[in-house]
Amino acid sequence: MIYLDNSATTRMDEDVLGAMLPWMRDSYGNASSIHSLGRAARVAVENARTEIASLMNAHPAELIFTSGGTEADNTVLKSMNAESALVRRIVVGATEHHAVLHPAEEMAAHGTDVDIIGVDPDGRVRPDEIARYDQASCLVSIMHANNETGVVQPIAALRERIPSAYIHTDAVQSFGKISVDVKALGVDFATISAHKIHGPKGIGALFIRKGIDFKAHQQGGAQERNRRAGTEAVALIVGFQVAARKAHADMEVRTAHMTSCTTLLRDLLVRTIPDIRFNTPESDVLPHILNVSFLDAEQLDGEAILQAMDIAGVAVSNGSACVSGSQQPSHVLSAMGLSAAEARAAIRFSVSKDTTHDEIHGAVAILAEIVRNMRV
Ligand code: PLP
Image (cartoon, rainbow, N blue to C red):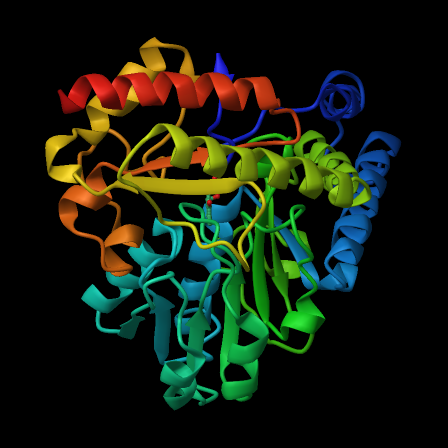
């Protein structure tokens, strides 16, 4: 299988798994217990918190662990409006992940003021358009980088326009690929997740800037300094730590490699498939994603292309994994101005540190043949 769906998830590294196993087999204590097994688990959790926080230029007390990116996104929006009662209006980008858009829509249905902000043809928000939300009662949630196109959003510029508002950024796709420095970005909240960087699924974290009186959305025990109840997933947290450490230690090498793969992909696609359109711009994008569609999209069935590629041994996606199979045009590409047909027949390639140039050549040859056959 040529796996080019690393935006959806990545293969877990062997040494990540190796670091996790002792915390499931032998050191299975509850980090809240006061006996030695519990204390060992507590030390592991706090070490991981300190290291992951430092990788995003945060203080360990500013990081809470969650069950993943989805929970962290939901938690910020809902707690800030309900439990913490700090904001009355939620502003989200039209190309946000559904983990942000769907809770925002749900909150709107229950009476919260929610505004959805459009994007330019490249998929970027215009900071000037958001300037009107410069109020302490607003939470603006704009992702750091998009999971379908790789487009990086101008978060620091956004902060300059709205110094008084709260800003949350979903950095699930960018963390470990490019710098996510919460101070340089100027954000109050940031979401990250382990399984996009060769870590385990089911673990993520939320940065909550010091000084914000943040109340738990998920209630129960006093874990995470009363900001997220639930027994800490020690093995997953340790796996996240190792994956994050490696992603940052190797960031330059990985970025150069992934960029070489997506550059090769662009070159080969242009040369072998006529009437292809790139939905990923050439600059200010993540190194690992390339989104394409076709000018004669009406003639092509996006799902059929994906299925044919799967049968031929290539795993790609048509955008957000949650949308796949539902035949809905991508909301991201639609917001960028693509027609429904174009947004339906789009393909997202996403590479990883492990992708080879041979795999890229193989995938393009297979796609070219599928499209050629469909066009006759
Ligand atoms: N946000 C973005 C941008 C994503 O790409 C994803 C994963 O698909 C999520 C949030 C959800 O993260 P998780 O799978 O950890 O719940």
